[in-house]
Picture 1 (cartoon, rainbow, N blue to C red):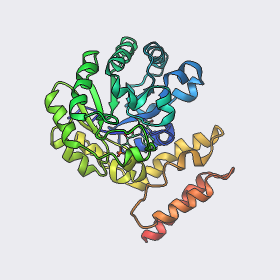
Picture 2: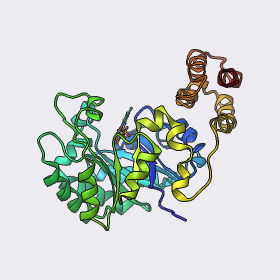
Picture 3: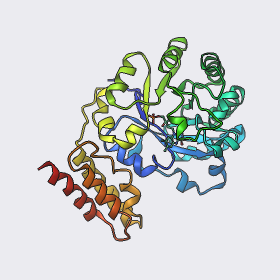
Picture 4: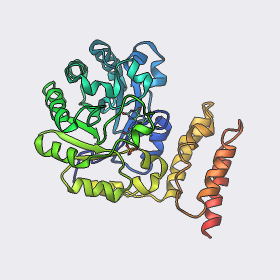
Length: 326
Ligand SMILES: Cc1cc2nc3c(=O)[nH]c(=O)nc-3n(C[C@H](O)[C@H](O)[C@H](O)COP(=O)(O)O)c2cc1C
């Protein structure tokens, strides 16, 4: 049976793929690799570590994504995070937001492969688990065909064996982060070519993959893995339920079973003083494209922020779907 957990992964998405979201995704796939949101090395050094790093045991396999560009800081962050037992540490070399640029990390590091190599070497020295890199194909006026092979060469020489390539450039001036995920054109053939040029590296593709069948066709073309972001968030059932077949695993609960599977987790969260909305906000897309989807979404988005909202609201939302299907 296929073991590579990266055949399918859910992308790091700030404010979206928090620990609650990852538990929810895990109810649909036992196999896919799940990534945290980006956590900066500086935040780990100086911030509230349990809040930044805690996760639930069910989330495995789970990767911690770090942001930063100071090798010693990244090394220290990896050393600290070691106690949390993540399965992989990933460095963000793809995020184009202004805030990230000003700290000189994220996509702007595509221009500084030597610095990225220093960063990952420092991280690898502290990490008991693989250190991976998520990057773009280039930034601004770089020519991807020219810079991407050099980037992979230099960073892999520092010890990284596994890259996730968002198959579009980031334009660091003039586009918002959102536009930078939509406007620069996707170049899948270039990523495929990188796999052929660097057959010893694990190359995963990311960007615009909207369905499980699209992911499968990328794997069939020889890529090692596919990372899905927005589609997994907005239509998790279509992208994640049944994904385990990629590993020859028959696990494929239906959406109702997924909701039932979340109940104990939600109950424990409420019990410890958490809000329903903190979890259900990630579940709004579960019935996308199915009868009752609108009622499900409406009941949860209107009711779940209320102080007393509990599992009965979840049942009420589910009854909208059941009524629509009847
Ligand atoms: C809301 C949001 C937040 C994101 N935050 C991160 C992040 O923290 N780190 C990162 O590497 N990429 C981040 N991304 C980019 C995604 O990981 C992914 O590369 C991008 O959405 C393209 O994949 P997709 O077309 O499958 O969504 C974010 C994307 C979205 C939509």
